[in-house]
Length: 533
View 1 (cartoon, rainbow, N blue to C red):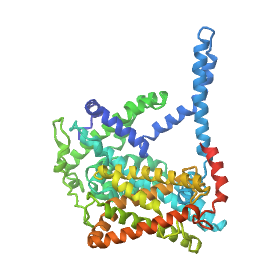
View 2 (view 1 turned 180 degrees about the vertical axis):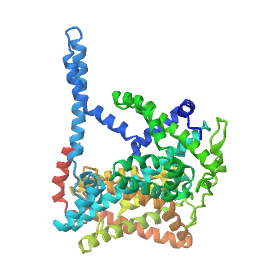
View 3 (view 1 turned 120 degrees about the horizontal axis):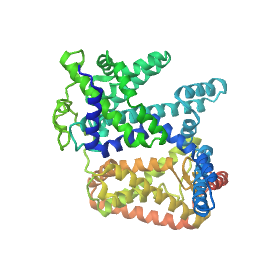
View 4 (view 1 turned 90 degrees about the vertical axis):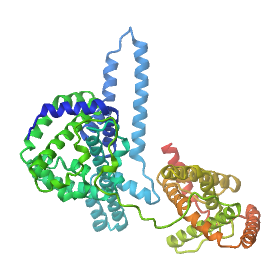
């Protein structure tokens, strides 16, 4: 094999020259989402820590000639530092007290690594007798590990995919960073990278062995980026075979970036972000392609997984990677429910949907209280078995979000915003008109005046998503089977009962234990908002 460090770096610079913007964005995303480019993260952290020291140095440089201008600058910098310290203090002292998100947030932010979380949970369960707290810590640890594995590591492999394609295709789309998800191999990629992390952690116990294995496993992300079907065990084995005899050479290649690494440290990570990270990754991509070529020539075991021939073209092109030529066939998604979510709803059906979702909301609230306290409570302001806030919210997302139904992520986010507005306004109106609260999220994670919180909004967002794409179309199909005359009679009867209930509840609202007894949380909510606003 022709190992030529100079040629690797020259080719990498050509790739950077033709794809700089997209590769820069990819590296920034990887730095933020995955554990990639950790040195740059540390340098940026160091920059924040030295801001105060720099302020002191500037104070010593103050002279009569530029005293006023320098003082203005220093005052602005001092205000920025105080704002930063204030924000950090709020983050460090923020401890929500109620809800699932609160437990997970406090456990996740309170525990360091996975090993600390395990020890902490064991301490809570076996020595303090707090089984619930221990289980919550374990849950938080699992969530952190899952996020790191199936989001961070999967995106990292997607980033390597973009670097491989960008060598020859200069119109690579940024969405290719989601390559493992696009070909429905995210689970396999995540598990493969998890296996690699476990192996490296075990080798870390031997110190020297870790350094060797770091280079031995260096090509795993690139192998998975080409063909995830090889799996974790196969990718590690193939990387070992590729790097056999080249680990020292790759180490020396890394040393040639030492000058850029020092310059990055001197610029608090700026050089790393803008140049070194994409440059070094592009160089590694060149190394991978050369090792890959050598493996195919020598027909080493597992080299048959190098079957993405579109990566082997010798001439660069301004087009994008030919996705249709990719050798792995993406399985078609199975359609479990055949519904038309784009349908238009008649006025009659909208009325029936309002009462349907109002009743479902009432059942939901009553069931939650029954499971929690073991007591039946007629939730809501009205006396009847309906919670109109659920009906109104459902109709609003069905009607107002119709133009966005083909953009599911946008629909989900807008549903959260819309539900938040409805819930906040409803809470404010009920408190102003009746002087009481029918719900209070004080103490919940990310709550606003106790009227809305992240936990409820996420739940409502998911519910509205299901309503738009599945539940509402299914109910509409069911309503189609009801004779129109019968449907109108039912709708009119429900409207009369609902109106009568509303008139009666205006002066005699439904109150009592489990409905409006939130006095114990009101002061907490006021205190929290005063501290965290």
